[in-house]
Image (cartoon, rainbow, N blue to C red; front, side, top):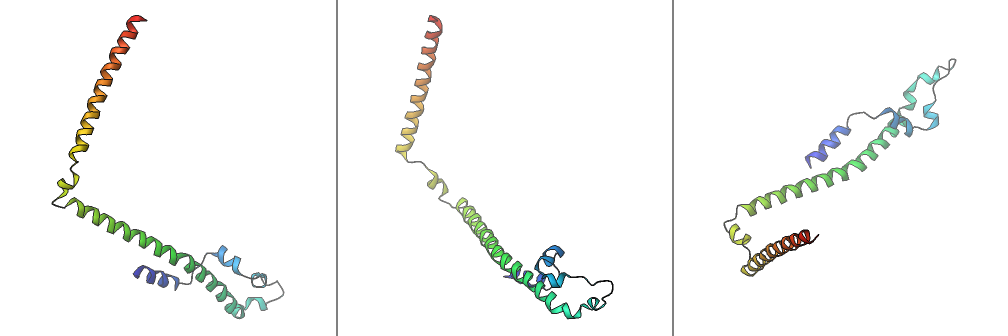
Length: 134
């Protein structure tokens, strides 16, 4: 929650990129005063409209960033918990017992290794006979 509160505190600063701000302004707000018209230099009357445009940007930024922050912290917290649990598994006293292979599986593995070895020898003999005849 601290990070979300920081986000709201950062939004207290009056800042936005000029390009984004300009896109939110209406055409009347974008007008610049002419050379003979000095009333355009008094921008106080435009403050409410400018602030409204600024706050539209703030709302959109928060609408985008708050879910992104929540998702980020959920993933970060999940990774931390998973890491902690995995390290906890490594420290278990019965770890060796958990990692032991069933005796039947061990016998099958050894039989398959022996079979691979015999097939390799047979392949070498067939290759040598093939080379001698060719």
